Length: 365
Ligand SMILES: [Zn+2]
Image: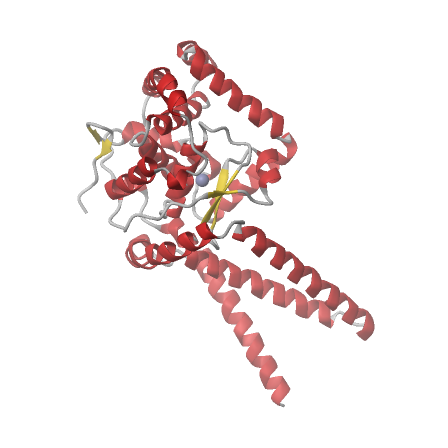
């Protein structure tokens, strides 16, 4: 009797966790205004101000530890269930372990939402900023590309003379610029920057052409180990933007670029190099060739070094499979455009109204 009551309680607990996870996954609850107000402006910044400084002091990636513990727990649970099923000549133990794994996955999803994931549902950048035009014409994109190239050509010498450090979170100009960019866009307290960490997933990043990611369970930043020095400031600023709750890729690119162009010349070079790279992938082949003609030999060598880095490392089948999975993940988190949202940064830069010095104009709330 006592045992069966405990069993019922366990089943009810599991049902509640799975039901709650399904509710969050498939309903529009909570609405964007509530997420912005209660999560992004209140709970999340407090959490980030504790978790990121803590994970910065840990020399390894917390994600590696979590992944190893999870892997061992799953293997042990399945092995035990299979042994018990053999002993009992029935499938009940396997059913029980499946139910437990489903509950654990649902619980993990709820933790993901509470620690970071709800940022996917906050107020979109289009609602924060004054946007001037509807869709930019391809001539506007090319013009922005030429602006980026003019900056690259001018900054290449000074940026290389200045050089790039190994720890972006200790670059005072970059962290100041990150705080300034956030204040331009949101009323939330500025996020704490994270140190770019190496991870056991480094080879996976290399094979799939991923530059970096945020561990949503530790609010730490993990980076591709092969990044070239002049790529790192932008990747750092992009991932920090995720830490600041800009979950959408286009928004993180936008905030990352705004940050870099406010920092040292070495970081500015990194930001414009990213924008050139992004635009180059979006224009027609003829426009791409015309843009390339305008790039001076110095930045050209840097672009070629990036292409060589990516080609050396990637495994094309794994790369496309991994981006397909990420596309599905983004769509599951309400980013309708999936990975295409990376490119939406160009539209955002062209449509946003800027005061002099690339200061985006915010909408009156
Ligand atoms: Zn990102």
